[in-house]
Length: 295
Ligand code: PDD
Image (cartoon, rainbow, N blue to C red; front, side, top):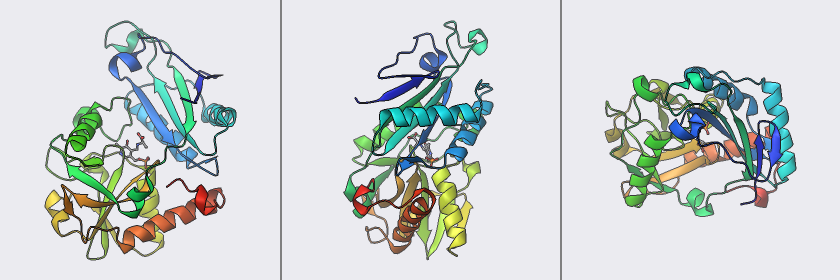
């Protein structure tokens, strides 16, 4: 694939990591995914802050300052020269002994991948996606806190595989207490009687940057929103639902376990959020021609 990879500051077409890196051996790493709009880096400050929080959450000391990241990410994106870019920033524990104790790892590896922006099929936005309420439970906060974005994604991978088997585009996971959490790489919102609901952070979810933006947009536009603990039964009479994420942006979810959510079509509140989010990106990062939108 056509990529540029920045490995500890050096930009290459291909990069290889030691099999003794604990990121590879044990998933002992943290990461972020950043999208672009007009090839400008969206919400970079928030992503770098979350990267640091995630690293602190696994006691991983990142040896570089934010300025270094900004410079290296910009260099990598420029060198890749795509119309729109998908950026993945990974910080691993580094090379050590074949032993889970991170004490033997002396220096984290920092990898920045620039790939062409990932684009979901247009009809995911026009018709909405199917979600499956899977049997795989989201990791407990007391075990591997979903609020920490680590490179250990097996929990989500297992949920995604179950959703695939069920013919859905993504999984919706409950936590061990049986309340709604999130999708495999997205946060979840639903609408009931014109009001928005989303699982609160203490349900055990990633504090999504797109989720934060959506909450802010709800506040600014007088759309009532409540964060809390919601059992899946709440969805039986939901009118609309959508998922949020850096790559997906605001994506309607119109079926759950093969049954329509509301009338089975993206609803007016979802459409409003999709519009508001696009407008915000245009305002912050410059207007995009309609055909240039990554939908
Ligand atoms: N994932 N929940 C999980 C488990 C995620 O992996 C993600 C994002 C989100 C949404 O967060 P944000 O709005 O900050 O992107 C929620 C990225 C996009 C990924 O791993 O591809």
